[in-house]
Length: 193
Image (cartoon, rainbow, N blue to C red; front, side):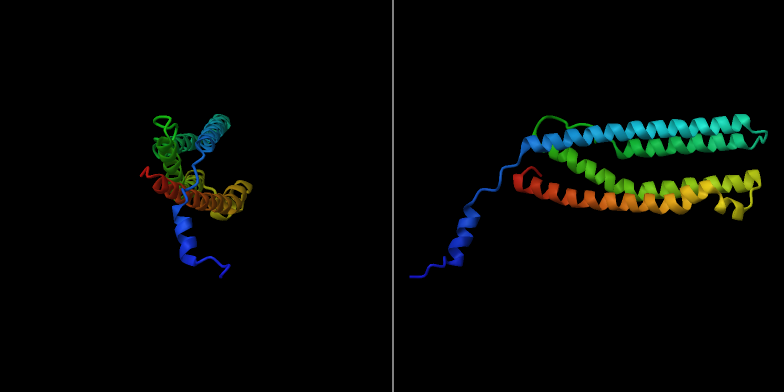
């Protein structure tokens, strides 16, 4: 008598087992936590935008150089562009359409896809804002390129900030790709998609 079970029997036994039940409460909690994070991030970015616009206005008001008002226009237009892109990317990511597990899965999947698409767009917008800022300072204020590239703001925002931002966005997008793969697999297992 063989004490080792037949592999075919083990496979059949494994295939007969029902898949683990999806923890609906955990999924809802995750969506609620993501929603809180989404709102908190929105609030922080809104405050940052207002501070940036306020700083540009204050700087232009105190300056004798008339071209500093071009800075205010540039910063305002760029802020509007960034907010429009952000709102388009976050469309449909605020709350589930109903209380079903399919709706929560769909929302989580849509949020992951939104973050993945936003990563390269965010990097491009960051670089565009940086280049635009340098270009107007050089062109309108007559600041030399070497002086611009060695300025403390450029060191922080450009030499340190740009790579740090890009790496952060890429790492975040990769984490969301893994989560997206998990959620899509879960949706297939549940027969929701």
